[in-house]
Length: 396
Image (cartoon, rainbow, N blue to C red):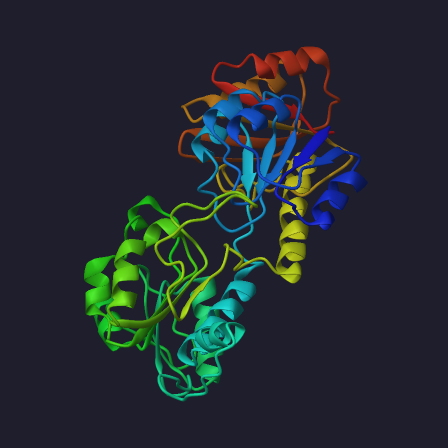
């Protein structure tokens, strides 16, 4: 089997598949659609990060593809519905880089309220301007966290340990960490000295934060976005920085993000007390190693055992391995009678299904079956011939 990894995925990920006997190739950067279509024709396993887009055209060019691994949190760059239609499992890692993002946010908060980058830039130009004006301690300031998920809640604990007051808002009912207090979105904007966004990439969050939200913020407050680039109106943010309404900002994500080495342009460039970083929130060696190990383990487990417990798109099924049996998996349209049709194939041949798990999700159903009878070509052909079958695999 063949595996392809793009965007400099950690070597631990590559090593996992090499040890499992895969023919592994790695490409250092992302690939455009045309290039990817050429590369994936005989690939079974595809690993990407946030830059590479898995489109319908890419999926159509990859008939052998079994699984896609997103070595990051988000999967917006993947046509997950298309993967489901083709019987391709998708896995990601929503956990491993959360600490790295939270630490970067906290560091940027400290640097912004102390105007560290502003002073550093001046000194690089040969200007010695030692001043306390506009510089503050974070202790006693109020941090407003918009989106209190895995990253936001970690940042909450870290900020409170430094003496900050923490308020937050979230679309879900979530448990507050420490002494953090939940409040409305408008109350947060009007109260917080620092506002930081940690929302997800759902379509409804596009253009979530713009002129009206900046208008509600306190004069002299600080703004951070380490979530998704399309969430914030950068033109409105630039105007509020130029007018002095905001005293500083830090952005790690952008509406348009070029490939590595390509030119970058944004309205926030060259503004004082603005920190711009090229989407590196999760780019620490520790996070990338953990992500590489986690996502690769899930993909290998899926290929070898059919386990979809942490899949983004397929029904969640897990069946303990029993090597004395023979395991098969069947992905199909979610219509009445599919499980009956599968089991009838075995019954008509006198084959006992020792164990099975079955679940559905949206338009698809998924079954893992262990039998007491070794499979043969006729059995495989009969299972593949069941109407509305998407994909059938023999595992062992």
